[in-house]
Length: 482
Image 1 (tube, rainbow, N blue to C red):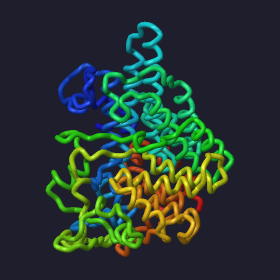
Image 2: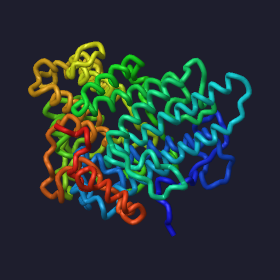
Image 3: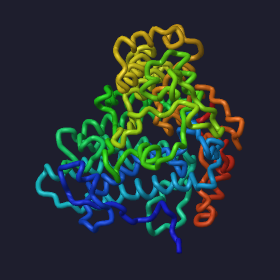
Image 4: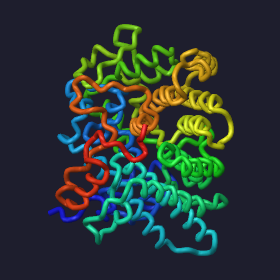
């Protein structure tokens, strides 16, 4: 019988012995009893995060559908924003509370118990714990940007089965403080997870500092319309501390070429044998209108033709009649970008437009962002230069406000990063996505709370819904003002 909420479960789902081989670290069998290590549990939390943020599985990962990168074929309910039949909010909630945040907490406990011999071990342990703090903040940033008010200050406590929901603004500021605290503890002159158990940055402390500051930059800009003074301070501090500055510094999770730790896009599009998705006319038409050279890297042409054609969001589309997801994307070891240089540069362009002191110009950062995205997709320098001179792309000649220019290009660049694209769309309100004709609601700007919350934490669940203005998909988060 369930007596405790999913976000306080203390069951460690993955454990592994120390090894210097990251492939072995990923391939450890979670069903075989092993000696749990802090590094092994942390590696599992990274895998769970990357898998959930990347998956197109309709039971939880529907953001490619929400932002209209993909449309469905036979069963279009999720692209019509039917969230409850498959418990989509609950599955998303469970993964980030239980499989990520709770496991990071377990990793912290194991790391704290590691023996220390000399000052070097002490600093390495401190670095590990600071990286855990950063990753936990990252997980909570996803949760708060999905739901609004959530359990935070009383979450992850096995003794408290009915934690209160904290105010989303308070959580935002607490996460920023947590990132500042973690960065202040990190010493790049020493290592951290030196056993190969950090599957994102391989224990490189300097990279984690840049990641934390890039996350701060993201969070700072999200509050710019509601607390511009605080946003300015946060953003300028992040940039001064050093953010991701090249594609080589991207926070990328490298999946393996054989199960079970493959990219979930491959799992759902290839291994499943199903043909559930086609790209939408929304993104295909946008890229064609701009002569975007990334289109063959994103999609195939319609079978037997040289044309790209997207399906209709919300409709049941014929798989054979439209373009498909490009084959390279469906490789089992295709990496997942969690935080990219392209996003950072778009954020810096926005910061300049908002009058923040981050160096450079808006056009310079905008061009850098597009260039970073295209280089990551293998576009030639010549084709990049041609694209940047396109009057519909060039920052000086493209129509619309700075929000529209950045919003359109960020939308294209964030392809396959559906959750981040959804967040960017809510912040900038561009591109102007149109609600599918068959949709049962407006395009969601948040997820409703899991139905299990009403049963297990009813009083706090009810209070949270009232505090945010109603537990519906159209209730905007506190920072979503324009």
